Length: 105
Length: 164
Image 1 (tube, chains in turn orange, purple):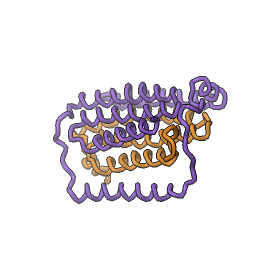
Image 2 (cartoon, one colour):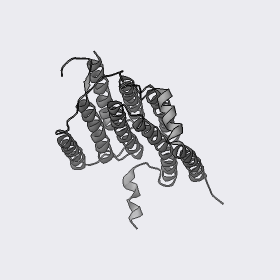
Image 3 (cartoon, one colour):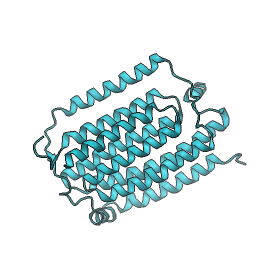
Image 4 (cartoon, rainbow over the protein chains, first blue to last red):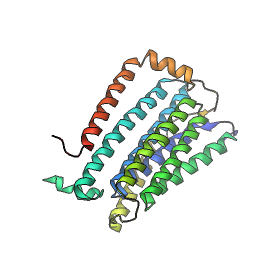
């Protein structure tokens, strides 16, 4: 641990790994499509945290610009995803993803 | 001192992330996710990435979460009528995610990294970030504008009641 002024890089790795695993668990654990979307957001944020940590570690701004683009893509993804969800709800009256297994054909 | 701040913020982030998954009510999940995003923004401040901390709060905690809340309210899902998965599937989900975490942590164990001195790097200040963004990444920046336009058109088309 050493002095309290510095933060070991391993701890950032550990924190983002834990957050990513919680996101994976949310995707597998729940059936509500909205919660699954939020778990995906959680995973994206875990990766963003890791990118920012390495960017600060190497004192290189490129990583943080990449996080900026990740946020832009995530925002677009959520807009389209929620629109699809509203359409699915309109057709099936439910946001349960198990309803969608009729897509198997 | 900063180490304690990191630990407290990390604890809050993990705790509220767990509550996102385990809350029965979708509204509670969304509010816990906002709490997670604020904790992550705090970690960004600790890494001196001030611009990204503000953007994280504005974009995620502000815009995206309001969109989620709007959809949940619109579809009137703020009740706890989610059909439950069987206990076996929940157990398998937890074990699978736990195994993934063990594998990732195990692969990171041999990493030879040093400690970060908080507030000592200036890469995350808005001046440096803007120079890199509009110098090296100008084309991706403009392409992301096209992406937003496509996403907006797609969302509007999907949301229309009947397309003639």
